[in-house]
Length: 277
Image 1 (cartoon, helix red, strand yellow):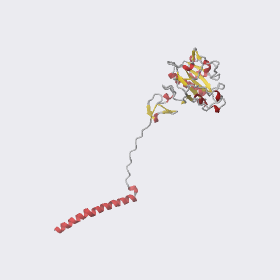
Image 2 (cartoon, one colour):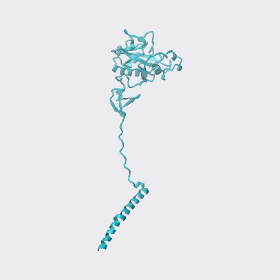
Image 3 (cartoon, rainbow, N blue to C red):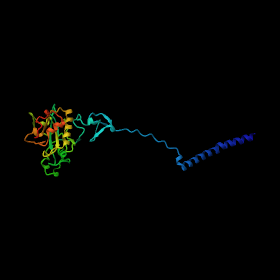
Image 4 (tube, helix red, strand yellow):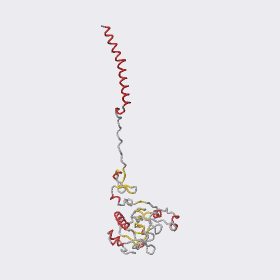
């Protein structure tokens, strides 16, 4: 009986100490071989959760409300809540729907000045030619005198306007409407001198010898409409009206009657009338 018990004990020790470990090891070896021979049978590695996408926030240039980039209306590198804010002057006096090319040719308006006048000019650079960026260069003091024989005669002038409307209707702003641009020079409007103090200068790309484009009239209407939201405009005049004998712009080809008709601006806001001059 004791021999049987000893034999049973020996078998148990053999199973647990020798056979079973070998069997477990062999099972693992076979599993490794199967994995290598059949990669598709391997369990997929757990995929880490995707990092949350954090969308860039931008501020509306008009009201400063922050909103997701994908919801904003972008123009010339600036962002807006919607088309309505894009068409207005912000509190710094800049229009959303235009290209901004900032000029240093400006200074502060006299304290407590009410901006109530718009002065219309014409300009072309080189003289008689349209297109390009020469007007922008001129108003920003970076005109190259070698580019045209006329440029050396104006290279030392430091002038600007608040806005330029090109032949294709593009609007460029150089100076905030809150600041005094240098566009009118010696000038008088109904007894008030120094019209730069209380006016906004708008240049139309043109020569005074050819008609202006219909698109320019349409954009001028929209521009004045936006300006009037912030400034109580009571007079729209030409440069020649406030500097007679010295200036001729916008000239005989500016159709005052047509512009008043399409803009529906009251005639009393045109103190020099609607006849060509």
